[in-house]
Length: 315
Ligand SMILES: [Zn+2]
Image 1 (cartoon, rainbow, N blue to C red):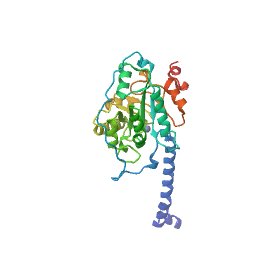
Image 2: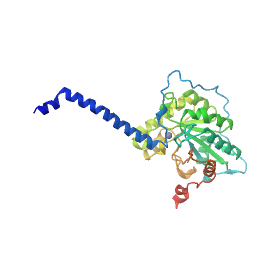
Image 3: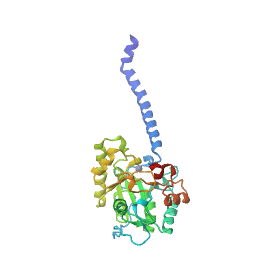
Image 4: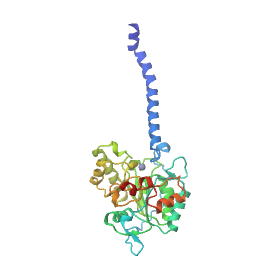
């Protein structure tokens, strides 16, 4: 009986609480670490994050306000239609940091962009891609779309100057809840500046949610919130979205449509064409492990990935 009395004593309970809390903390941490490792290839987690305060020293250069980036009409004989497809390249971070294959060095990125320029590639805006996919409006045979996921600040610091140098168009899919909050994410002035200079700023949801785990209503909320946020910052329509981790379900396709998006992207597959479905377009993954010849292979051969090629799937 004395033993049981001790179990109910305040001293025993206090000791128990002090022993339990650190163990629970360690278990939760371990769980988060494992989850981060699993997602590492698709998303760099906030291991280097510093919340931004007012002394954030990343400032934007003078915005170039002459907007010469309206939709183009392509003419001539060297054109193609949407049945031929187009490589939509998917980048993430452009940074000299190592340790994650979605972090491409500045030098490698520069070499890839130089290759596109030397081989006379045309980089399309997403509006131009939309017209190509949806209305079969012809584009130059050598066309490519450049996209960046997550909205890392290094897109502004490292990729944007190179894109500007070659007068290339590109798209950044931004996780809007991170904007103006973390130093690793582009901020509102940077978004505004790039948006005026040939870079489409589009949605990558509000919090990089795995949409498969959300109800239709929660998906719709995230898709709408991120759209509204970016439309306010850029003062432009945000019609396109890329799903985090490339994951979507039936609710996602409906939510994307109901939120007002007209085109959406997954993360994998091969080249993009109409057969993908306008709300789940394929993209071509670009890893820092690829050398220039692998880059060129993916750029020039729509069946670069034989295992997942459309020809194989349709058979
Ligand atoms: Zn992502």
